[in-house]
Image: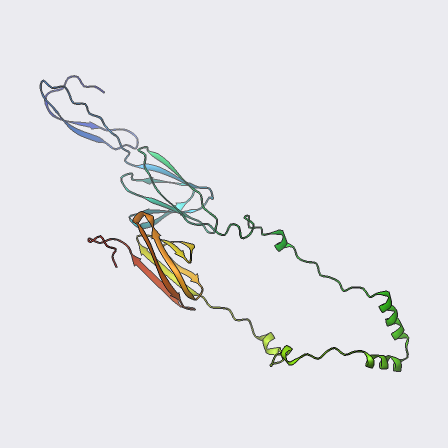
Length: 278
């Protein structure tokens, strides 16, 4: 709009827009004999409605602000955000790798965030979870071969012999070789048949961090913190905590003991000296 007549002095221009935009004010000074100042108003939304979707529905949606992770629901959903703040979206679903992305505001009242989740070990079972045809095929039991005509005739001739001749023929038949000591277990095999197989124990790892961190163990993705119970094999493992938003990429070697919990809690928030807090 254009104002052609206004009294000299100090004035305040105020715009009260409709919809999602915030009110705008500006102070101007009008001096006699000078042209009126040109004022340009830049309206910004007071709130933005964000539509969050995923190619795989029913993914859990987490809103991360200032290192605090909050659950807001499942896809598809709509949330209201404050465009003056910084947000990160994290989407997770069982069997898929967690997806994270920063929220960028473009000055409009609405935005749409679409996430594509990557399936974990998608190629292990043929991609569709059905497995290979060879794995599903069960071999039919084989029947013993039928005796040849010669063997059948020999069997009939043995049955036709008198009893004393059949006994003599059986005594001349070769005996199966005796089992060597190496083939017979010391306990006769009874104990090994009754004794169950030993199951290797596992340990558990609890990981927490401020701000939130992505968890990687031995190169495998385990989601993000906090994670109260990660099952691992006993021994040494390489734990990596990372967050590009806060420029953190931390690694350490951890020792997992059988049937015992191991806890790793890290604070990467910087203090007044600019160094991470211990």
